[in-house]
Amino acid sequence: MQSPFTERRKGEDRRKGERRKADRRQGERRQASSQSARKPKPPLTRREREILDLLLQGMTNRQIAHAIGVGEETVKKHLYHVYRKLGLHSRSQLIIEQGLKKR
Image 1 (cartoon, one colour):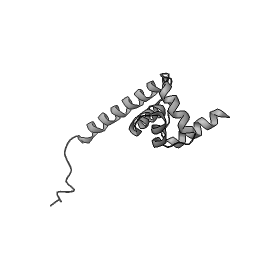
Image 2 (cartoon, helix red, strand yellow):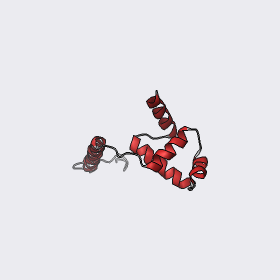
Image 3 (cartoon, one colour):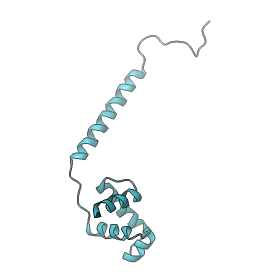
Image 4 (tube, one colour):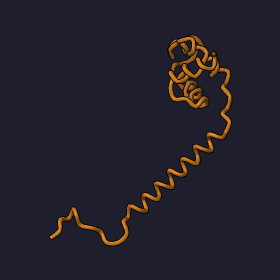
């Protein structure tokens, strides 16, 4: 008698269809990301530029918020937009990237 755990199914493996579906999704993601890479990135707004300048002076989010009279969450939201527009993922990447451009 065979163990129920080693019993083989008869017919096509149903997971093949799932894999194909996952491959299609992955292909769609790759296509979407390559299309978004071709689109020109929108320029920074005046407020985003202002926040970026304060960040490059070494200010924290809380200090930036106090300096321009907005909430800390608003500063975080603006920085998120700056990161996306510049294609970056972190504050340190932003500082390095902007430092290289100033040279």
